[in-house]
Length: 470
Image (cartoon, rainbow, N blue to C red):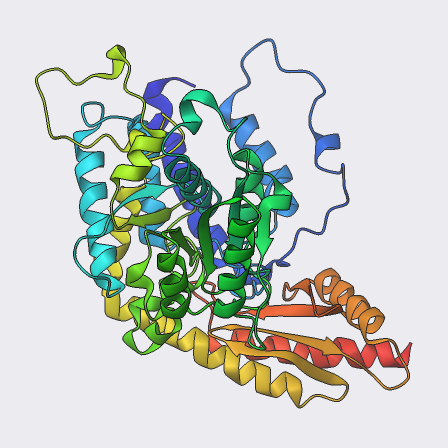
C-alpha cells in the first residue's frame, strides 16, 4: 500500500466502522470462538511479497470481528468498560495519522500543552482544589506503579534509584484487600516484595479500618521495618468497595506516609457532585489516579494521575540525558519525566474532543442513568426465584448468586454464568466474595440503554429456568 492509497482505505475502514457500530447489538457480546481457532486461520510464516489491501481487508472482515469480545456492545456488563465515544474514536484516528512520539515538549508542543489543559479541565470537573497537577498515563497499572516507586524513594531518602534497596530497612506498603491486583504487581516490580504489602483488615462495608492501619504501622515501626506509604481504594474492582479517604489519610499523615488513591473506575463518577461523598477527603492525598477510559467515554488507554506536588515523582522517575535536552528553553514540561516510558502517545487529544463534543452535563447524565438502571436491575434480580444479592449496588456495580433449593450455590452460580456467556446476549463476569462464587454486574457502557439493562434480567430468568428443567 502506498501513501496515495491512504484516502481510499481510510474511507473503507470508516464505512466498515460505521456499519460495525450500527449493528453491534446484533452480535454476541463475547467471542464465540474456541482457543486456537483464530490462529489456525493465519499462515504460519510471514509473507515474502506484498499482499494487496483488498485481500488484507477481506481477511480482516473474515477473521477478526467474529473472534473479538465486543467491548462497545451495549450489553457488556462485565469487568469495567473500556469506553469509546465516537468523538474519542475520531480523535484517536487523527492521533494515529500524525503518529507523533510525544516524549518531550519539543517533539510535540501541542500534545504537551493540551495535556496540561485537559488534566486541569478534569481537575475542575471532579471538584478537586487548585494546586493539583497531573499527567496522562496509559493505564491505572502504570499510575499505581509510579506512585509506589515514589513512595519507595521518598521513604529511602531518594537512595533507592542509586544504590538499590539491598541493605536498607525493609519497606512496607499498606492497602486493603479490596485494592486492585496492580498494587500487588507494583510492590513486586518496585522491589518491595509481595509479603511486604500489608493487607489491612476492613470493616463490614469493605473499607480499610483506620484503627487497624494505625496498629499495623506502629507494629512495623516497633519491629524495625520502614513504612513507606498507603494505597487507598475508591470503587474496588471486585465488589465496588471504597475506603474512607479523610479518616485514613489522617492516620497516614500522623506517620508522614505518602498516600495514593486508586479510583480507576469510580473516579469518573465524581463529575457528579452528589456522588463525591464517596471520596470525601481525597484532596489530602499525594497522588490520585482515575481512568477516563472507564465510564467516561475516552478511548482506551487513558488514565489521569493527579499529583499534589509533582516534584517527588519527577525526582523518582525523571532522567534527562544530553540527547533529550531542549536547547534554548527553560520552564517547559516534559511528561516523559513524570512516568515510566520515555515514549508517549498523544492521549490528550481524545479527551479534548470528548469533553467538547458532549460537555460535562451530558456525561453526568449518562453516569446518573447507569447508577439508576443498575439499582433497578439489582432489585429485579433480587426478586427472581432462587437469586440473592451478595453485595448492594455501589454506584453501578453489584454482585449476586443463584441459589436454588437443594443445590450448592457456588456450583449453581458458576453453571448459570457459563450459560449466560455461551448464550451471547449479555456478558457477565465473576468474583469471589467472602468465600462465595458470585456474579458481578456493572452498568457503564457508553451507549447502553435502560432496555439493555433490563434485558439482562430477562436473560438471567430464562437461563436459570432452563437450568432448573435439566
